Amino acid sequence: MPPQPPPDDIADGTLAPWMLPNPPNANDVRMTMSHSRMLNTQGVTARDDAIIDDARSRIDRKLQDITNILILGKKCRNSLAHVSRLPTEVLASIFMILADLDPPMRVARSPGESVESVLYKRLGWIRTTHVCTSWRQQALTRSGLWKNIAVGFTPHWMVELMHRSRPVPFVLNMSVTNDVERDPVRNVVEVVSTPDTMARLKVLHVKTLFLEYMNSLLDTLVYPAPLLEDLELHTGIYVGSSSRPIPGTAFNSTMPKLRRLALEDCMPSSWDMPYLRNLTSLELTNIRQTTQCLITISDCLEMLSHSPHLELLILKDAFNLSEGRNYDGPPIALDRLSKLNLKCAVPELIQILRTLQVPVTSTVEIGFFGLHDGLSDLIKFLHPFSGAGVNHSWRMMIICNESENVPWHFLKLSIVCEGPFEGWEDSLLKIRENMRMNDVAVLALGGDAIGRLKKKRLQSILRCMPALWALRLVGQATGNAVALLQKPVANGKGGEKAICPALTSLSINGVRLSEMGLDSQTYCAMLLAVLQARQALEVPNIVVLELLKCDYEGFFLVEKLREHVPHLTIEPY
Image (cartoon, rainbow, N blue to C red; front, side, top):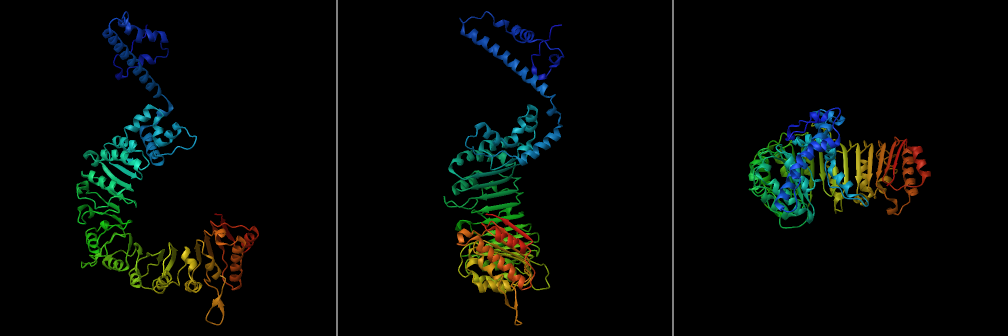
């Protein structure tokens, strides 16, 4: 029986006659599928162009039919492969995991690397969908796979993923850090700024170093964003056109589901916007210290009085101190707040902390600038909190116990100087006077200013910490602190005692001896002298010694250190 010709309409997938155990040979297929169908083109000569064009069109259609049959046949054959046996749900779960672990991203071409290799890496998890047509089709039907559009994507992929993610809500993270990226990313913004796309926008993060670009972006996004939950706008530190508030036309001021708002160098045009009232996280930072991006203390507290759901509040350099400093309203309860981070002048900090009613279990971090008059009063306002920090030229993180019926007992104190600051010693001593530090168990000191701290001042700090069992010294200028550990002090009874008698753990990080004009043998000898002196004073031995990121040599002295310290860790720089 001669083989049956394939159906004219291949869309119905009727290929059963062509999947027989003994298929016809190639010549029979040619005669049946092509030769017999092209007889009407035989005898055509080149005398009439119209007839020739018509014949060519018929041949092209028949060739396309043959190509479609081959594609469908290969698809049917591939459906019998082992990779096609995975259930659809399992394959979708695998794709979801890969989409998180290996997203498409921009990858620079390494010297000698082929273009194909770079393109392969840039695809990320998407290259998995190229295993077979079935996998690709299943991935394309899963809109949720394409909803996270990150910074690493090229603008072309951003636009493509916005189309593939329809109709589910999507996340968009854009970054413009140079002039080359402006126009391509602008094309992305044009796609986002349509009403249908804005209606699906769930998260929008934008980072740019150009203020004029952020301004034009905000002018473009004028349609409501009913599903937007997270909005983050960063303008960086480059100087461009003057920054201005977020216009009232942005998102048509319609973001009913907005829960997180993070703004850097830009502010809302009005602090009475409805979308500010349901926030759970608010972050306002003014890095460039621009006057256009400031809020008065009174306006800020008034806004917070209408935001009872806040769980995270960060306000850094965001206040206009020249006006609106007084707030006459009632105390503001933020019962859900878990973290508070403030940075401004000390008087403003005191006013904010006096007005806000924050749970005592909240983590509070405080930074101040300018004169530190009133620092003692500021520290008193931090008394109720179980975790608090004060930041001036240094970072100081404080963790204390939660008991309200006993003096303030600090368990951990970390001071890391970030830059030169005249009078920081006096501020540090004032903090010490207002804190009960005899329960401090862990102390970290670091920064260049620690090296400029007078030995007597440093000694007075260490002497008031009898319970200290762990000391961590960071940076170059740690020699004075190490040397003090071997010098006894008067015990008030005519005898001598060791500083920090409970010290059992010492960590030294980042000492570059070559830059200090010392050699490793001298420094190790000083450490060895500390261990021997403390042993002579009959205090507990230092059982843990860490030398991290230090350029030590001199294996003999290192072995000597091992004889005195059971747990010695050395990590070269």
